[in-house]
Image 1 (cartoon, rainbow, N blue to C red):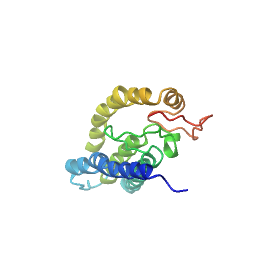
Image 2 (tube, rainbow, N blue to C red):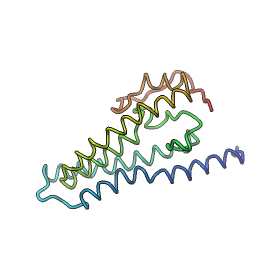
Image 3 (cartoon, rainbow, N blue to C red):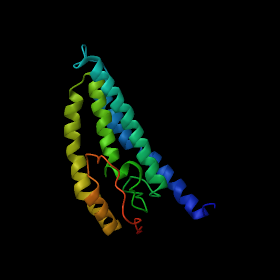
Length: 181
């Protein structure tokens, strides 16, 4: 069964919007750490090689999670993570079954990973400072907007899936999520 032309256009628009919105996490997880550290290695790195390996793993995991999250927004949500082109359907698949904000968590993991890999404690300070506006944005804008748009489906999701620290098992809703436009 092929998608309707309107559906194909929506998915294309979602993909383009997602690509454009990818600039934000790339800035937060890449440009800002580079501006703060020039990606220079502290010598010796506190924690040594184990810290660096952990850091590299966090960076890789963060990149994979962000990519997966963008795909879910484009395919499952038929939209983007950007407020100017929000998803048409509530995104609760993939990693969203474990944590409500995998993109923010993955950016934090990538920045922390760079701090460990490079031995640059200032990245942990930047992460703490940067978390304040992100938490405020999520609590004061995103969550109320999602409640208005998706109603009971989002409330059920919110009750079952944590905001920042992932669940150990995936959440499986008892009924399919109703979509509201």
